[in-house]
Length: 117
Image (cartoon, rainbow, N blue to C red; front, side, top):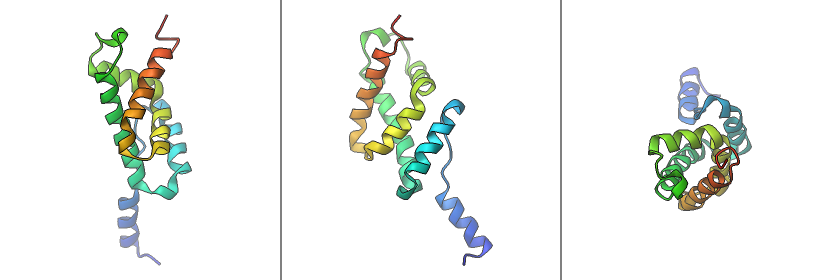
């Protein structure tokens, strides 16, 4: 059995923060729970994959989004799709798939009826 001090160290080492816009926290938590066997390192990698894919998607954005700054683009993507992107990052499972996630971001933005009116 772990002593209190050891338990605290274990919890700190294995803790996963719920990140992203508040309205996506439930989806993020569901993805973490669904993939809990992968551990906290996988959750942190998924957060990073979403951030990296968003930056790549912005650099490859379509003409409709050319005037949008990176900060605006990132804010839009996080507000609209963060929970789904985080879950998808877990499913993709590896940083080598960052281009696939970036393509999915741009496709989602292009097909979003609220943005293409």
